[in-house]
Length: 283
Image (cartoon, rainbow, N blue to C red; front, side, top):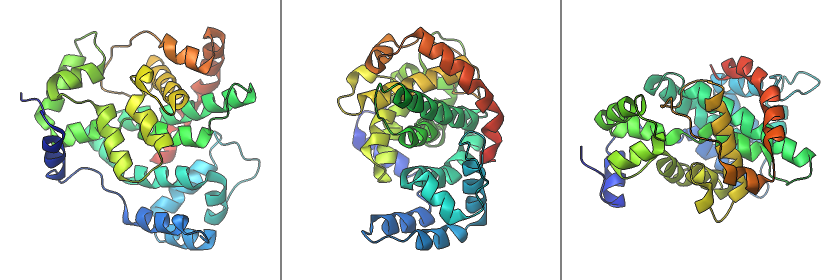
């Protein structure tokens, strides 16, 4: 197996691959509308309504027990207002991404969605305790997309991906380290590159880049710590499949960044476990 020696070589290889998830056209149009200073919820709703399956998915999410709105939401325009632009963008991206996940690695979509639920829940708890004011919806988006780099590896480097998964099944070593040993790059870095290319904000793509290396983050360090913890808890609870059975110790540095303790973790685990029953909303 040949390592990827340069960034240019990596990008060239990825661009030659046909099945890498692409930015849906509807998202490009919605992004243009949102970037307009006088953007219209009505116009965005009309764009969304052209894709019936996407509209249905949006409504399933906003009406899920996880969001817990007291009344059922029937209007796509109302859902757009409640979810906000970043979550909306991430859900639209995930329309194509989750299909690729299901085709690439059984259990990856469930892992990603549960991680999104958990990251949002942690951020909400931190806000309630007045520890910080990180946007829970930003964390939901980061959790949804945090493992998108695995799709790139599985699609652009198929033989290497098989070897990585094979080694991960036998090794007591983090998956990202195995990827780096073989390819000289890992899924967190690849995911960062793709999400940045798709023009999502740095509050999403930087936590994705550093969710396995929180100590290396300069900006959005707390967001990276939340994502690290959400990913860890999702794997510890055995929800879905992230590519490896090995579970490292909980990241003490991430806990110190967030100023939380084991009691906080225990309460989060008790509260998030029921989220496993909501994983069907992206089907």
